[in-house]
Image 1: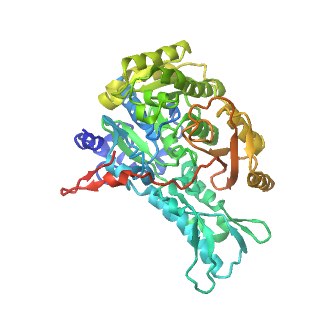
Image 2: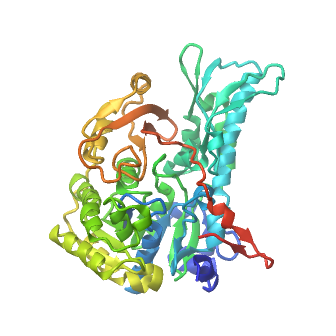
Image 3: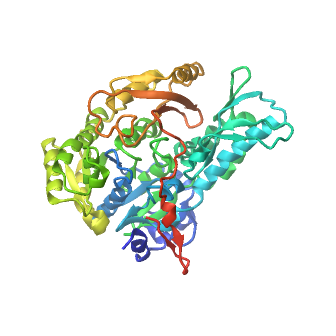
Length: 554
């Protein structure tokens, strides 16, 4: 059966029953039908003094284009923990419509380990991403309206971009204001995908509604004719934007197919944004469960680094254990095996590609000082010889590994890793540290991540990047954390350099200040903040049948 058929053939519990499993009462729920709800703003406040549960971060090896199943493993682990009698809860990101209709498909897990209702979560869900899109574009409209009516703030350069939650490369550079009307100022503009919008980052890093409004007011939207910054608060836009986001800031409660509670909230990409669900959702989950399973997007060089250096620093969090997801196909992919041959047994490909996994383990264990376990996400094309070789290689490095069969067996296929996680979270030798200090210069931060995490020999800067760094430091923002945007497929900034053998440099082409979100975006290589669709997009297979049932989402 397909994922969507498996989900439909599973009887879900009403969301009120799921809430009871983590002691959320009905007064704290805002229902969106039978199986979805938002959790009220005060639910965290009344539990603020309650002891936190254990925080388990799920990250991964550098992925193949279809991903390695971090969400699938996260759900399997949460279900597996319930199987062994532990009170677990998930804290995950919301899917973006871009990948759903693009190349990756949905982001609700797969097989017998899914969050549900699958179609609704993958599509409009509770409208959070639409609200972010509206707030983003309201600000754009107010900027251009201000310029139309005399430009009192003396905009010389508009920095704020419009957004859309779809992959559309045609919108990467556009010309706007071409109607020819009096007072309209034509200019070149750009669109980002919504999950790369600064408002998405702000929503995920805000502590509460007041903090959200303050951060929105701090968004840098332009430069005036004297070279001074112009902020959102000068347009008085933050109030209306907060109104659009008043429900979006509330975390969403759903369930797994095995009825484990799941909080799903916020969805920034990790290759072009910071890749973590909201601080509000994670902190809420820590008060509700004894084990909180959360994930960070793409490989550990991106999502995990940003989770640890940005989110954990901001929210004063520390993971008790890290799960690194690997697959046989990804190991071979990074060992030089061609995509068309990746499903064939190839032990040499594993010998070569396991170096990628070793580097992620080393980064998390020795650079960040965290306890790690490898989850080998089993596919039906994996051979016994390949699995045994990976297990043998990790045993040589004294790294615990678990073969996870959640896709086929549900939580039962994750009991072993659940037991290993319980053991790991009880260890004392968890010496968490950041890769850089906020007091470091912007260049020092970039170079520490590039050299210590990516393994680069040097960092090369464009003239524009050097100029932007100088400007940002002069403006007083030099002590903010950095969010590097680069390809997810490689430790390097070249998506084709999969094996990363020999020396390579990281190339910084631009640097942008996100004053509202409170970090500095560093653009490396050819990364785009508005993705494009593949030649054959997933959208071609998505349809609705004569019974009104959605088909084709995977």
